[in-house]
Amino acid sequence: MRHIIFFQPRGDSDRQVSAGRALRHQSGFSLVEILTVIAIIGLLAAIAIPQFTAYRREAVDAEIKSDLRNAAMAMESYYAANLAYPSSVAEIIAVGFQSTQGVTLSVSNVTIHSYLLTATKPGGSQASFIFDSTTGAIH
Image 1 (tube, helix red, strand yellow):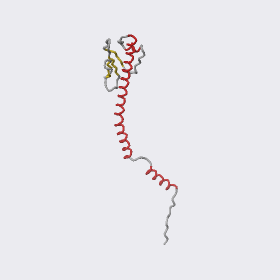
Image 2: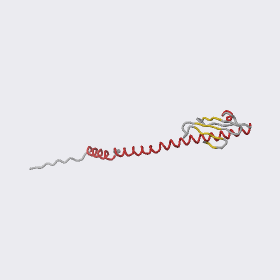
Image 3: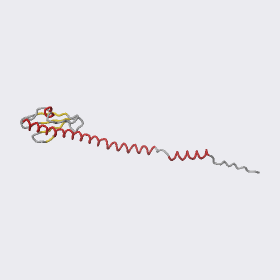
Image 4: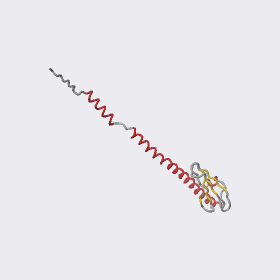
């Protein structure tokens, strides 16, 4: 009795199948890896966004306070030239004061010896800041 053994040599089609299987196991990310990355990005955003908002508020406050100091210097310059404090912002603009864009400034309670400057801009930590010439403080 004769036994016939069939031997099939490995051809190109087998190599392609093996390469396909290897690529399927080696490329791409698993669902767990993608979810982990999304969770980390979400955590970083939860920390960064409130911090960014706080920095922005501080920047707006610094703009307002800077304008108040500059306006106070302009008020004193006007006083040195005219021996009286100006009653409007337009008068200190004439001596060189330039307000920052978006900052609204007003002059009030002008007397012979004192004045109040009020500055506002949306986005700060408080609605407005006030410079009092008698104390030199910004509230």
